[in-house]
Length: 414
Image (cartoon, rainbow, N blue to C red; front, side, top):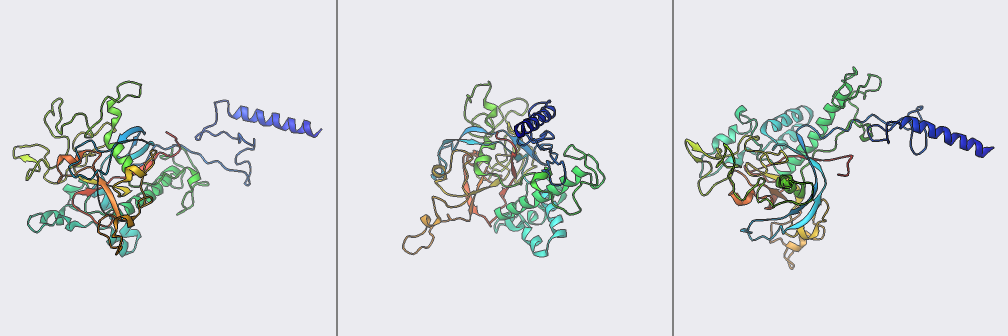
């Protein structure tokens, strides 16, 4: 008798599951009304397990999808700095999102505006870029000290004078601000308007004023953050443009984020024009009057120059860019071959770079130095190659380093 009741319940549960899954197997965005593990209805009563609506948002504002895969990281150029710190090796990088452009002055001014409203004065002061990075004892760069950050004409030029720590703090703030705004738009404030999440919520189930949505709610994007060095280098290579069939062969490596082994455009009406903003040689930052080539004595518009095959602008030149990684010269030997990343001195402690007798450092390498990549308006072409790398202390800044943000591709194994 008990077995018959159990069998009847199982049959009923199976019919319910079949009915709710007639449209196909359950997915994250269409999980059905009943659990495929227990047969219990989702949200049947206030004690039941609730499954929130989920629209699978693709990335966040400003981001472009970067399809991951296998690649060869490492320097392709002759090692003129003789560092031997990025030897070629094959790795796999998971798909992720990255800012289409470098973070610009207008974005940083927006950041300053909101933290001035929401934070104590000390936080605001700590977020101010160091505009004195333009000062030189034997050069007249004084106007940039005053105007580069705030003058409207420089709005969409990359922010500089920002340390790694400041860039990291910006990413944390951006995450909170974007998620706050998305939650408002998703619920239509309190009025039930359809928002960016593509679904409609009424006032009765909208989050309370000031309430922070949970990860399970589906209202929250993953964190904006600095890209890892491997992600940055992979995105700069943009090797999707070298694969012309559905096999897994890539026809050639790229020395720069574009085809060819030269820094000039070899095609069309722009033939002969430089592909990036960099220093051409001693004393030559832009060419001659009447025929300026890269056209920029200092930084340039964040959408200047052609994007690479991922659609990313200025992955070479304009400004160098901070990445997450702590610097070690032998990281290529230590890090894993899936999503390689160095977060600290594991396997290569900072003591390795100190004097064995006195424990005093005779090297700039410690756990507070971070990698930056990409070359800048003040660098020669060698540094435009994605495989080159340099480092600086995380609380330092210059007129040649900016950054862009990245985000994981949550909810996917690709």
